[in-house]
Amino acid sequence: MIDDEAYRPETLAVRAGYDPATGAKAAKPPIYMTSTFAYASAQQAKDIHEAYFEGTGPEVGSAAHIYSRLGHPNLDMVEQRLAALDGAEAAAVFNSGMATHSAIALAHVRPGDSVVHSRPIYGGTDGLYNNLLPEFGVHSFSFTDGCDEANIRAAVVAAQAAGPLKLIVIESPANPTAALVDIALVVRIAAVIAPRPLVVIDNTLLGPLMQRPIAMGVDLCMTSLTKYCGGHSDLLAGGVSGRLELIQPLRLLRTTLGSHLDPYTCWLMLRSMETVHLRTERAMDNARAVAEFLVAHPKVASVTYLGFLAPGTPQRAVYDRQCRAAGSTFSFRVKGGEAEAFRFLDRLRLLRFAVSLGGSETLITHPATTTHYAVPKRQRDVVGIDDATLRLSVGIEHVDDLIADLKQALDAV
Ligand SMILES: Cc1ncc(COP(=O)(O)O)c(C=O)c1O
Image (cartoon, rainbow, N blue to C red):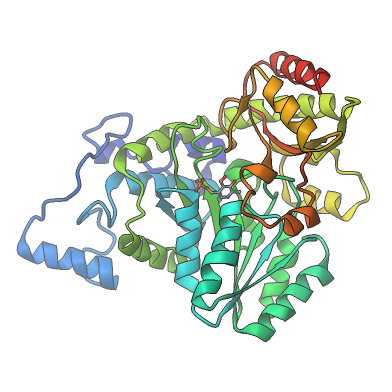
């Protein structure tokens, strides 16, 4: 096994998590297509169960497995690779980003507790914290300006008045507007609350190569691996990194929820992670050119591309501190409203009109009527998702072809 500390993320993306000595010397990871594992003896069976459920006994730290819902070799590999990329002690991997978010919430929140989250936040996460959990007696509060201390503190104070504050969940940059939350500021705010709430970040939009929240003091770094890490819009997966003491309960909960990632999808994920930096870099180059085209176009009202943040603004200072690059997902608004946005979408020939992001192909969507459909209109308005807003996830095609398609569709608006 390689020493994670000694290598850069691009190297870890290729090498971390698999040692040929464990796989009949195969240079690449075998797929362990099994639902169950044979015990060596009755005593070993008992010891493996003790190690899994109690964390004690002679099998602690061994590679032994019980049943694939509890864990399997390909899951171990992806978890080790994700932890290495995130610079964390450990990771837990699930069968979707939402399964990951749900496990984090179920592990840490009980009836009467409160949570605070940033806005905008992915529609599914919004539903979890504002529709489902309140039905179980959880109080949910949010803030919209993640770079303003007073705004964040006001949500925290309101939450504390309602019940013990257990989680501060932030998404930065946020889907779909690329709005930023000051990660270090949220960590500082959490640090003076007793008992201290956990700080959870959804790092999906930049991913492990372009933003490293664990090094900034967050407790749990969650990523929808469906997006940039999977990278080809052909699988669903999610992961969370952090200290082992926080990851271990999530793995145990996953056993109950049955939300582990299956061996074949783990193998696909390992393969995809090897090229995540190459795909991300090319997509980001394309995104800059596309954003520059859009911002100069007379039929475009605004563009939220992070590379355009004005120097001297609080958002720009936060961006310079915590983001390694501007990413390739952002939104823009056409002049007009829903009719103009729909006319534009229906004219596109190359760009694919579909939800999701972070794939090799460029995807475009209309958040108000798709990804953020279930978010109440007044909430959407506050964070700048209106009827003219379109989200773009720029892929790795030739940029001239992308711009030509955008141009002919805009001409038709
Ligand atoms: C920012 C963000 N977080 C979480 C999710 C949920 O991930 P998944 O679709 O893998 O469940 C998404 C999905 O679009 C997302 O955009």
